[in-house]
Length: 404
Image 1 (cartoon, rainbow, N blue to C red):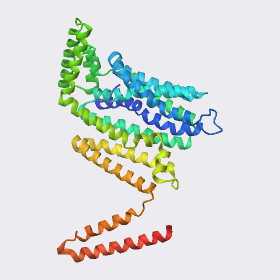
Image 2: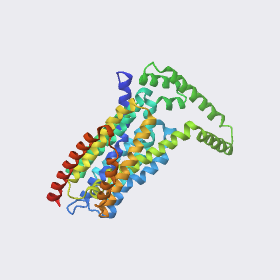
Image 3: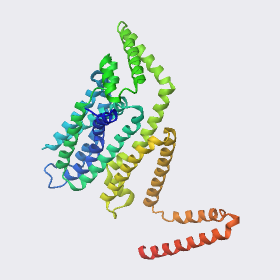
Image 4: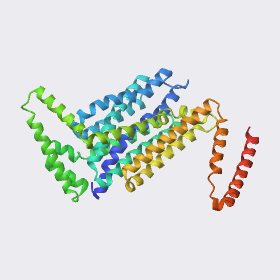
């Protein structure tokens, strides 16, 4: 492939993004297939238990993919792991597309879960090894954008298209990911770890140009030391090898540059997965109906939430480049916690029929307002506040008489 190093990095990253963003399609696909298969006129009939298994199987299989990813990356390399993941997902969609019995849907969903387990762990690692530091943050954010875009796309398709047609579209998308992965090179780090230093230099310069030679030297030096330490383990007994690896593991986790980022990353993952993203993706109708009721247009609300999420990811691509990571962590975590408390409080009050809580809130705010005037402009502020209060009274009275 010709072009600048940035375009080459975008090309190889696009394959990872298309593959890893399958999580948006796979999880949200439950909305389409379960509801349509439970229709009496469906060619494949399922009950609630089968529907639950169709939704849950990718999550169960994901654990198997996670357990296999370390060994797969070590033995097969990053590129082959990515190709294996995309092929498993592709086969899963094919099985669902041509399924004439629910068992084939189960198998397809299970393969998709294994694929997600492989790529969710290896994907960010591969992108980090492909890309330059100055582009890394933005290109990693592309993954989040792709996940949000595919979730929105799936919810739109689930509202209007049949489940087989949706599976066909997803098969085409996944086939494109397979092609990009096949034409992408192995990562420089994986080549260096295998002792292929000439290939490592060639791929590294193809991806990043000739402006990052120092990082290339550091990579080869670190890989040489690692390969030498592995060579020294050959003459040791199995017990000595296990003891040596355990000691290295302990030393690794004692380093601040390891355990601090790990704790922060785990916390951010917890925020991501407990902020409602899986619930909105997999069970959007139930979740949204629980919050806003049945009087609103539920599909429009769901797609609006997906669109907001997509736009926020586009905004994140800009913010990541302009602000420091520490500030972003504090701001996003703080806003997320506040919003979760607000939503939880709102749902609790609605479910327990406590609308009169607003009377307490209104009375509580009055003394704060009265003590907030500036003495030098007390009269002017009082007039403005009185006019504002008058407008609020008129609007609230009209709303009350119209809708009560």
